[in-house]
Image (cartoon, rainbow, N blue to C red):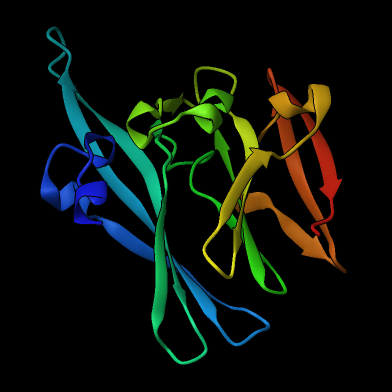
Length: 199
């Protein structure tokens, strides 16, 4: 497991590679629960204008692998899994990054943006970086859902079917009302509201 965490996808130094932050503890209907943590860190660079000597700080945001651990009803850790991802953005505090967690009985679903090619990657080392800059370009990436079951099995698919699979979402803006979920879907700077249900 240590070897899986120590990947350059999560930074160049051990303090970055192990920069996991607890995001959620989800209690399932069968009495077990799932712990979720995410590799999150920030870096910055100072650029000085040679003429004016004015300094500008550029901040980089990294939201990478998700660590999921299953704990059974007896309090024993029964499995640990890594969901590989590599989200990078500039001066936006990770607006399109990270994930939203939803619980449905004895499973949870994680909604986040990724490159569809990463869903086909045969090795975590093949995961490509999803780069976004909120201020300069239309968002990149496709909304995907990773379903994590109580036994530790994981299935990841595009969130939207057909031609809608090219939409990007803002995970932090997903809202639930009476069992129905609402979000904003973005495609090439075109915004629209989307509703969905989880089964």
